[in-house]
Amino acid sequence: MSRKCAITGKGPLTGNRRSNSMRATKRVQNVNLQKVKVMIDGKPQTVKMSTRALKTLKAQQM
View 1 (spheres, one colour):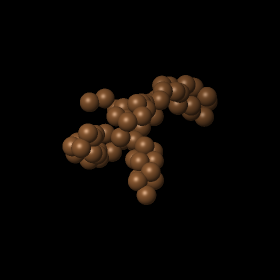
View 2 (spheres, helix red, strand yellow):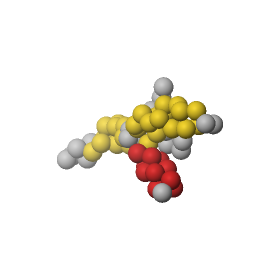
View 3 (cartoon, one colour):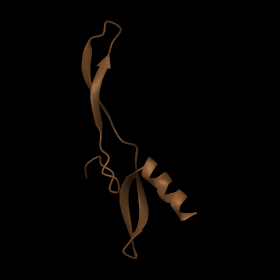
View 4 (cartoon, one colour):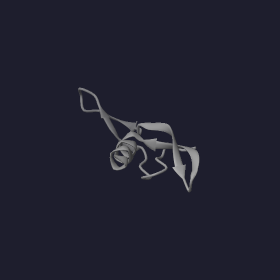
């Protein structure tokens, strides 16, 4: 399974890491994914979702 949110489709970001001399090396900033049990079509399923999406879903349930 790739590092991608099942709900929003949010994936890793790429960019440069900069040293003190401003030398650039590639880096990857991964998404904060959590395994969560969610009801999909009335059945509980385990999906990987970002914490931002999880926070939004919890706020909508209240």
